[in-house]
Structure formats: structure tokens, C-alpha cells
Length: 330
Image 1: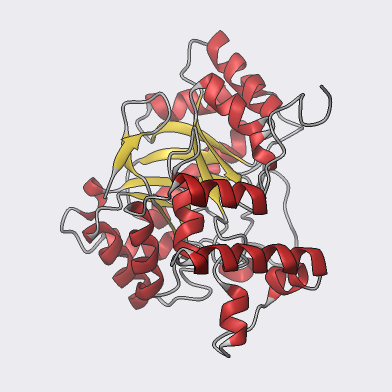
Image 2 (image 1 turned 90 degrees about the horizontal axis):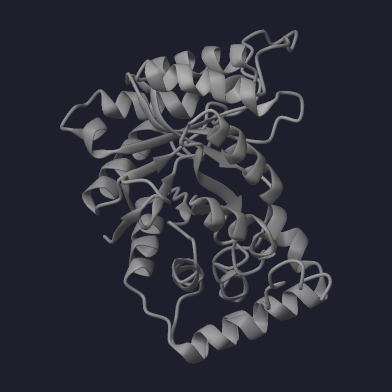
């Protein structure tokens, strides 16, 4: 496994991030534990989760599965850089969504971190991430709450997820006024088929020293060889991938992508991950394996070197928007 610094921090993290969103809803506890063991064994030390994972009546379940894995000992917690998130409503009352159980008020941040620590069976969180912007809460209040948690030793760093570039700037300018480190990472939607983050989000992250952690690196399976799998009768596209492929221009683009990689003897999913690892500012993409086999495929991407010819071909098939303002002006 290869490692890098998380943004401008001294924290060393693996170039692949283990996403745990499938743990609970799609992968049972025993298999989830096996995947985490395999990931740690392969050198992946950066695990990402969120308090709402498990979803619906089972929200919080994913953190519980990770907590029971930590409880097995063997240095699991000490070897893991743990990131979780706060924002979604975690009210336990199914009949009424109570206020102050979501977003980024000082009250909810305090409540949410205590609940996450309990589910995760740990006394600290390495990277505590804001899952979404909160238009109602000023950053001074957010940073006051985070400062208290840092002083208490309950979190070490703060990160963002799904923030636009201007909010990254606002957040870190507000933190600087308080003499705080501010955001150290941004988790955003970024892949070959969805490159809008290159316009402002990634430049803002680089300017302020945030490590970029792309989620959905295969764009919901669209970049994982979906057409070849269909033709071989292995698996049909479903959900967002199926909706995208209903568009004939998107289908033609994906076909061109798969043809390019077939010409060079490359696997689509591994190539999509390897491409992200070449992008400026990227710490490492989040991989969310449902099985141990999917994890093995992701691990091969770290060692995959893409030739200039392949990189040029990928840019031709999936051209990025370019930086702003040139992307929309001159």
C-alpha cells in the first residue's frame, strides 16, 4: 500500500479509503468484519463512515459494526484512521422528526459526536466530517463546538463533505480568525464521468491545503465495465447506472471508454480508480466493497501505472470542464 499526507496535516493515510456504507444494509456483520480485516491486512488504514449509515430505522448500524470490529482488539483501533460524519437527522422517534437532531448546530454536534463515539466503541474520532453545508448555522458556532471537542480529545481533525468551493473558503477563513486549523479534507463526488469538482471544489481544497477524498469513484458502477458485464450476461445495470445508460449519448461514451481499455488490456474499475490517483490534490478515493473480491480489485489499482496514451484517451472520452472561470467564461 502507498501512503500520503492528508492535506496539509502530518497525518499519513493510505491512497485508498475503505468506505463502509454497505456494512449493514448489504453486507452482514461477519462479512463486514472480514472485509475490514482484509483491508487492514493490505495496508488500508483510512476508514470512512457516517452516523446515518445503515439508513432509516437502522441508521447508526454501520458505526456499530465498526465498533464491534474494534472490540476484537489486535490493535485494530490504533492502526485505523477513523473518519465519520455529522449532519443527518438521528432522532430515534419514528413518529416525529425532532428539531435539533440534525445539521451543524453546537447542540447537535455535541449530541452527535457522543452518540458516534458510543456506537464506534472508541474515545476519539480522527477526522470528524460535516456531511453537508448548513445554511442556517454560522461557522463561528460550528468552530466553537469543534474547538471544544478538540480540547476534550474527542476529535483530532475536522473535514467537510459535499462543500462547494466558496464554503470551503468561508469555513477556513472563519477558522483562521479563531486561530484554528480548520478543514483538512473535502469528500466530494469526483470520477471520470463527473468532473465538475475540477472547476472550483478541488482548486479551493488545494488552495487551503485540504486533502480531496472522492466518493463514488465508479459513478455508481457506470465505470466498472457495466456494458461488458451485460453482454456476458453477468450483471445488468441497475439504479443510477441503468438510468444513465438509457441516454444514448452516455451509453456511447461508456462504450468508447470500455473499448479504449479493452484495447490496452485494462480493467475498467481498476482504471477508474488509478486515474483518480493521478489527479492533483487527491488523497485517495473511497472504495465501498460489498465483497472481499471487490476489495482485491480495488487494491490492484494502487499499483496500476496508466500510460500517457491511456490518460490522453480517457480525457478524450470524458473531457473535464476545466477550471473556473475559463470553464464558463474566458
